[in-house]
Length: 62
Image (cartoon, rainbow, N blue to C red; front, side, top):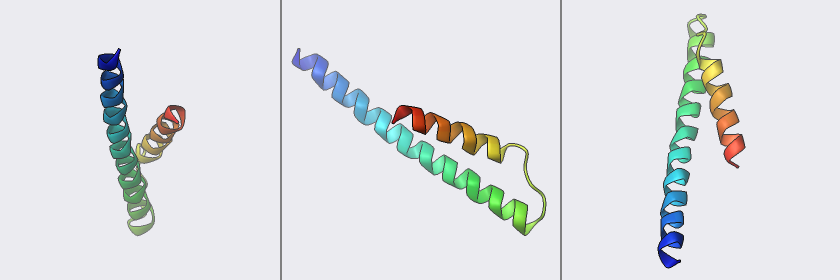
């Protein structure tokens, strides 16, 4: 039983770190979109979708 608890703890920590990096990906994508849209007047077609899907994933993971 202790082995299962340690495995679940390691898995939970790994997913926490992975989703923390996912937040960084979302923030960089939104930052890029803001700079390109308002700085160069050339919005991208993928940055909004990236942030939308990433935030949805983060929301569902709690």
